[in-house]
Image (cartoon, rainbow over all chains, first blue to last red; front, top):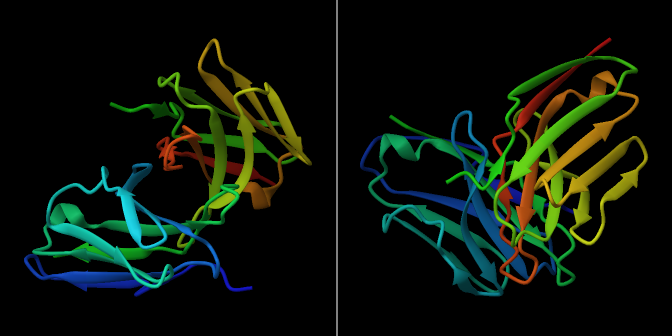
Amino acid sequence: GAGVSQSPSNKVTEKGKDVELRCDPISGHTALYWYRQSLGQGLEFLIYFQGNSAPDKSGLPSDRFSAERTGGSVSTLTIQRTQQEDSAVYLCASEGRGRETQYFGPGTRLLVL
Amino acid sequence: DQQVKQNSPSLSVQEGRISILNCDYTNSMFDYFLWYKKYPAEGPTFLISISSIKDKNEDGRFTVFLNKSAKHLSLHIVPSQPGDSAVYFCAATVSSNTGKLIFGQGTTLQVKP
């Protein structure tokens, strides 16, 4: 029974570069969420997937951020032309059909220099 | 606009005593509330939840109280144990919506042996 996994666990990049963050949800979970946690802050919602569609993208901070989900499973969050303010922990969570609770992965720590 | 607030950034309690963590919210549409616990370098783990139709939910050493009129909830841990030392996040959602969670900033609990 694997949990939610994310890769890479840490990413250091230079300002202006693109990054891709990956999330593998719990098998069979139809809902997938991306959040980020900036230093000293709570978790901030980014985007929600139900299957492969994203009915709620309201938390994406700018058009440099995008995400996709394929096969109702793996999701990728892409940040283009990274800025220093993008530095944060990016967390993925998945949820089963019963909408019981969200299970979080360990996160990807992104540092933009 | 911070819809969920945890006004105490930290709390220190002696082992065996009660820990009380507080959370306030502003959005009257929230109808489901959760507490997550987070250790360093790990993702948040679900602890306990409560629906707005209840005012109390208990699970072992953990009890969550909800005061809808005051838009306030609290998490009681009794007796507190050193292993409870972590960051605790309060979260709220509108269950008929996408299920996205709105988090507070977190409270760091330290339980001293």
